[in-house]
Length: 151
Image (cartoon, rainbow, N blue to C red; front, side, top):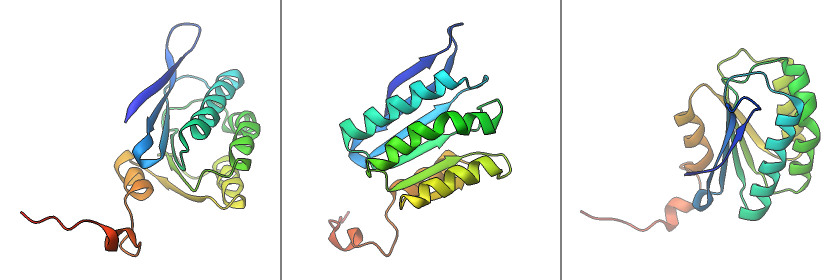
């Protein structure tokens, strides 16, 4: 996975970073500390849309553990960008990383994702979220097609 873009506020602090793993079809954005301003959210959402389209990504991980501010305003700011991404129909699975208690705003985003047929889960750790997003489950046919390795 490699950093595609870092987003800086006027003071030069990183407020979000975007990572892509094209082989796994994965986009990951990690929000840093600081208050999330509407224009910052728009910039990240526009970038996510571009990356999903350009790289044919279908798994999206969003780490909001360190995001600060009024979540109702954050979700309102992100809603148009998220809808544009979902209408493109590429995202199949979405994972939140958050250590906060589930709230109405996250439930609103989760509901919107599900309306577009996206599987959604919330995790407290990056490892569990990545496992859910990119490791095939036992029931998937990919295991039957996997090459057998002997040592």
